[in-house]
Every structure is written in C-alpha cells, then in structure tokens.
Length: 221
Image (tube, rainbow, N blue to C red; front, side):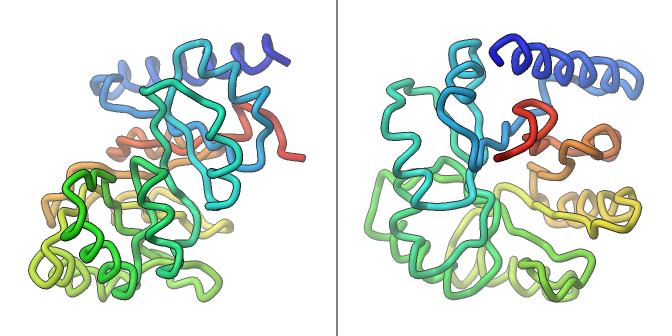
C-alpha cells in the first residue's frame, strides 16, 4: 500500500512538471489538495511522512476524529464539503481553507466570528455553480458579483479563491475558463479546479489548487 501511494503521488507530481514545462508555468504555483475524505489514517500518514501536508476533507465529524492524532504544525486542511452555517463555528477552528462558501448565512456567521477572534485565519474561497445544476451547491454565476460585493463591503471579508465542480457529463474546459475569468476579473488570486480525471486541463487553464484523491489513494471503501 505504501509503495503504491507514494508511486501514485510521484506520478502526479511528475505530470504537473511536464504540463507546466509545456505551457511555461511555474510548478510551484500548483498546490495539490490530496482529497483524504473517507480515507483511513494509515493511507494519509504515508503522504504526511513523505512531506505532503495539504489535504481535503468534507465532513466536520471526520475532521474532528481523524486529524486529532496528527501533531505536525504544517498540516493544511481544506474544507471541500457543503458548508452548513450552523457548523461554521466548529469548522473554522479546524481548517485552514474553506473552499465552499456560498450562502449569506455562512458569510454572516464567519464575519461575526472574525470580529470576535483576533486569531481568525482560514482562507475563504467561494464556490460557484457554473453548470446551474440543481443538485449541486454553489453561487449561480449571475449572482457572483453581488455575492462578492456582500463579502467585501457588507461583511468586510477577504475572498482568497474561487472553486468549481464542472458538470459530470460535459467537457470541463469551458467551465474552467469561466472560473479563471471570474477570478481574474474580481482580483481573486487562487483558483481551485481540477480533480483526478481533469486536473491537466485545469492546470492549463490557470488552476492553482487541484483536488486529487482517487489517483493517489485508490478507490474509497
């Protein structure tokens, strides 16, 4: 298991180098968020011991249980699950990045927490529903400008990144292009797009955070 995971991870890193060389990008700009949701601690420890510290989780309960045993100060947890406003207070204390900000109720909770906590430090990404899919979370693309205005002017929150999950049965390139353009237009520095099956295209189109699980850890139980 250890050899497989390290081999898989090295393969992804090498592929990133090749893509960046081809398109003249600095590979240091690409952050791998190793999606560790539902993966056992034994698999995660293999990457941590190899020096990789950035992971993606989608459930508060799993974060509390799984990561309490890790003492490494460099661990960087991205929350990539549906953000429920009632759980914002607990999530804020346990993650470094929230990638799925998409409701004003969560904005309000986060703003209040920041006001009362000098140590508030998670980065905030907004999730945009570029495919207008009813079953997916995210801000409708035509409401993005107003949502960002509320973030910055009404709640005084800095938005560090944008995130999307393209529709399953569609070519992702056009959605990646839209997210990239939205981020550039609104002075948002980080772009979270690209998963195991399309991260190469995402890098080509400007992604700075790729969320990869299956091709590193193998299929989930």
